[in-house]
Image 1 (cartoon, rainbow, N blue to C red):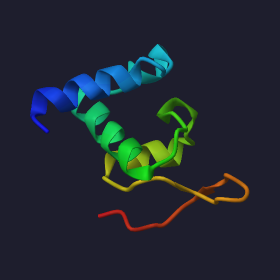
Image 2 (cartoon, rainbow, N blue to C red):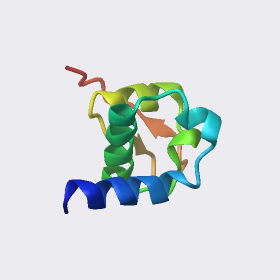
Image 3 (cartoon, rainbow, N blue to C red):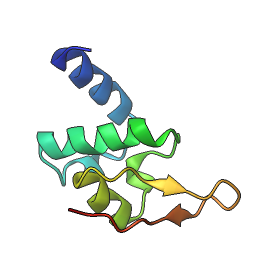
Image 4 (spheres, rainbow, N blue to C red):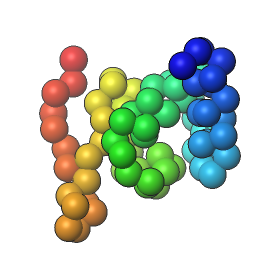
Length: 79
């Protein structure tokens, strides 16, 4: 996928997120959040993530949830 294709997909995906959430981040941070969102495999939009999950995504840590309870699972492997 080209860089432009990635940007287009991110913009399309973020159209379903709360604008005030998105305004907190610069473009590179939004791409980090988008990449974590794609890798997580869940349809929970980042504006519904817990603050720690968003912060972790900025460090490249993909959010996880328990399959039964859908509660976040945290793995502390930040750089």
